[in-house]
Length: 144
Image 1 (tube, helix red, strand yellow):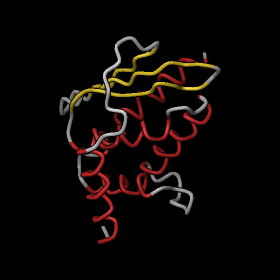
Image 2 (cartoon, one colour):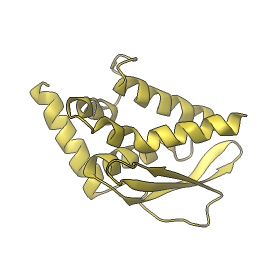
Image 3 (cartoon, one colour):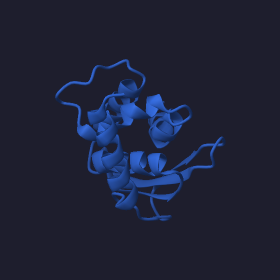
């Protein structure tokens, strides 16, 4: 892994772990998506409402390693106020980048690129994708 990516990874993880975006418990939300990693015990809940096809009042709460918390914080920084289609595209883009199915382009943010480094650490890729995977599953159920 190159030095630039290592530094980016470290900075993004530390910033989002120490100062998570929208880290608020909201049990009265219309929707609550639970994400749990049985291997390491990471557990988060995503809270949000839907209005006019947009995800609003999105927040998260829970506990886990720095990678899963930071990744969830990044997720929340991108989805609040977005349409379900935009949220789905964002989630797919992030997951595809981590699965190396999508090239990193200029439109991809440093936040997304930083998590590609998780692939270099065995067992950490699931931490990076935990809440993203669960939100993707939730969105697929809404479409049915």
